[in-house]
Image (cartoon, rainbow, N blue to C red; front, side):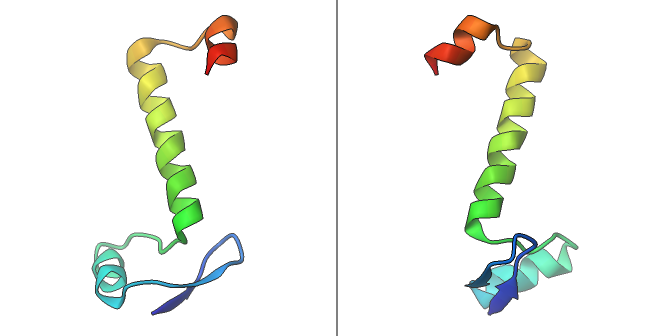
Length: 61
């Protein structure tokens, strides 16, 4: 199944997986956008549970 992602990419994804996401009313997205979204979600959760990162910690990573 080909989808047009919000970032402008046209990608070919598994039809069964996309039908499941559509039935759950989730937005269809390319792998790059999905990975970026998951990364942001993880950062938000880490900040919530561990507190905001200090400037020194940011330089180490």
